[in-house]
Length: 543
Image 1 (cartoon, helix red, strand yellow):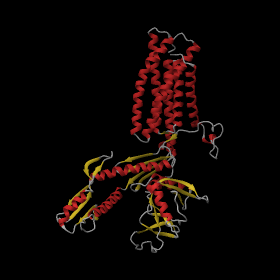
Image 2 (cartoon, rainbow, N blue to C red):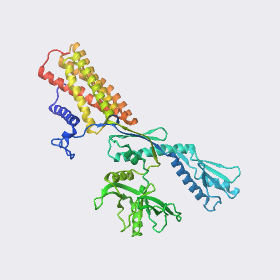
Image 3 (cartoon, rainbow, N blue to C red):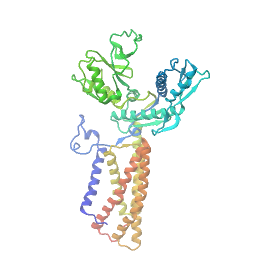
Image 4 (tube, one colour):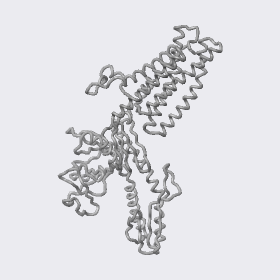
C-alpha cells in the first residue's frame, strides 16, 4: 500500500541516515577527523570513523610469489623412512643388515642373509600405508614403491608418485594457512594469499610498502625448540668441532658468542605453545611473552626445576636467539623470550611463533612494490566511469519519466551512499573490479525503477486511477525484481566463495549493491512517491 505507518517511515529514514553517517568519513580528510596523536576530534569521536579499505590495485602495496621447497619435505620424509626401516628390522627377532641408506631419493637396505628377504619385505609392508587424499580419506594407492633386487639381498623403497602428489597438496595448503595467520597478525586488511601453479604461493598485501618485511615474516620457517646448553663442550674456533653423541652446535645472534653446544633432544617444541605476544620486561625492553599447553608446561617446569643455574637455549630455525640462565623453576607454563628486540621485531617473532611453523621453506621468486600513483590513477578513472554512467542514467530517466525520473535519481544517489556506508561499516576492501561492481549496481538499480514505472504506465493506460496505478505497478513488478536480483545475488555469492582478491572485491560490491538497490528502488522510492501524492495531489500521470 502507498500508506506508510509512522514507525515504517521513521525506520526507513533511520536506515538512510545511518548509511550516510557511515559513508561520511570517506569524504572527510583524515587530518580533519583525527589529530596528530591519532585521537578523533569532536564530533568524530562519537560518529563512525571507518572508511572503505582500498585494495592493492588502488592503494599500492607488496606483491610476492613464494616457491615451496618440496625437495626439503621429500628429504625429511626419506630420513624418517630410513629410521622407520631401521626400527622394523631391529624388532625381535632382528633381521641383520647394513644400515639403511638414502641413495638417489631411495632408501636402500642390504640384508646379510638372502633368506631373510621375505620376512624383511613383510615387516616393511607394514610401513606401506594407503595414500591419504585431500579430503582426508585413504585411497587405493600406496605411499611406497617397494622392490627387491636381483641378488635377493637388496630392498629399495621409493616414495610413490601418488604420495608425492599428496605431500605437495598438503604442504602447499598448510603453507597457505600459516602464511594467512602470519599476515593477519600484522593487522593488514584483506591480503590475497592463493595457490599459484603446483608449488607456488601468491601473496599480495595492500598498504605494505616494504616487501622485505613480508619476506622475512613469511619466509621464516619458525621451527622453535627449547634445549639445554652443554657448557663443557668445546665447539672450536670455527664452530665445526666434533661433538659427543646427542650434542649439536647451533649459531647464535651474539657476536661475542657465535655458537653454543646444546642437547639435541628438545625440552619442548613450538607445537606446545598456545600463545605468543609482544610484551615488555621489567626494564621496559620489548620481549616475547609465551604460554605452553599442559604437556609443554609440565615438561618445561620439570626441566627448569632440575637445572637451576644452567642455561637453556631458545632455538629458532637452527639459530639460538637467546640462552638465559635458569634462575628459578618456571612452573606456571609461561615466560618471556628476551633478546635484542625492537617492538616491531618482537611483534613479528610473536606472530610467526603463534601462527606455527611452516611445513617447508619458502623461497621468494618474484617481488614487486605496487606504487600508489598507479592506484590513484585507477581511482580517478573509476570515478570518471561512475560519474559518466551516473550522469547518462539520470538524463535518460528525467527525459523518459519526468517527475518519476527525479524520484529515481534521489533513490539512486541514496543507493550509492548506502553501498559505501555498508562497505565502510564491514571493513570491506574496494578493488578496481569492485568499482566495476558499483557501476553495475547503478544500472541494476535503475532497471528496477524502469520495471516499476513501465508497469505503472501500463496500469494507467488500462484506466485505473493514479493511486491505484502506482500501487499495482509496485506490487506487480516486485516478483520480477526479486527474481532478477536473487539470481544475481546467488552468482555473487558463488564468486565470493570460489574467488579470491579482486574477484571477491567485485562479488562484495555486487552483493551489497543488490541489497541496497532493492531497498532504494522498491522501498525508498515508494515512500518518496507516496509523500508526493499526499502533498501535490496530482490528477494525471506525469510521465
